[in-house]
Amino acid sequence: MSRVYSDIVADDFEDKIHIVHKQDVEPILQANKDVRSTRAGSRYGDMEKVASIPSVVVMEWMKEGINVMAPNREDLRRMKKKLNSPEWKHLRTRDNKI
Image (cartoon, rainbow, N blue to C red; front, side, top):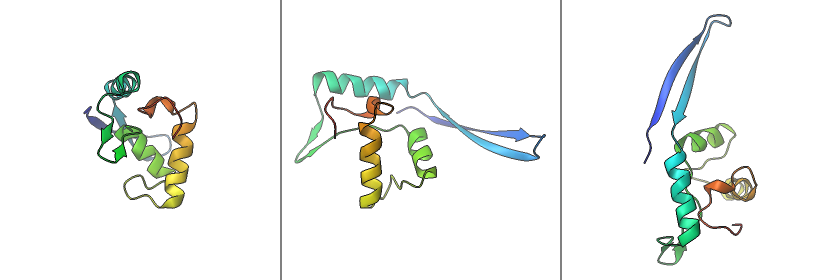
């Protein structure tokens, strides 16, 4: 798993500080691509892995009001919509839509 780094950035002009989260997501995206191409290791009993979402993306989605860690029906609907969009399709571990 890739590490998440946080930086604190001072904004002297607005007299504020900002916390910036960074993560090298390339290993996660490559692993998703590998699973999509081979379909190996994507089933867990009756369940199927459909996506692997980097921590920095989880944090952004949570800022948007999507509780990724304990989603309700609306959160699941919004996550599904995001994962099926062209912008986020690289997070899926299968080619067909969820």
